[in-house]
Length: 72
Image (cartoon, rainbow, N blue to C red; front, side, top):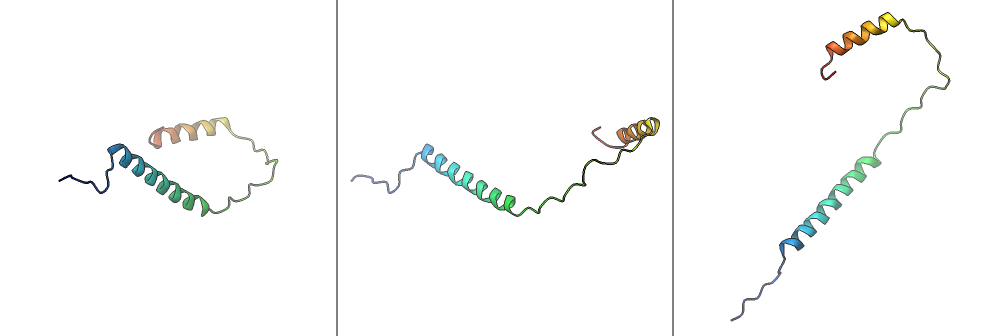
């Protein structure tokens, strides 16, 4: 008697099909996530008003911010 295989899939065929299905699933999920975004708010009109900065106060704030925040 001969042994007959109903469906002979090689590893390469299986991995190719699994990759195609996974890529299609990721593309489908991504397209749904992108299509449901809210519109961005409008920026204020240009030119913005110029404000004078105190260099010493800016330096103090930068120094304190660097020390107080992790990953600085």
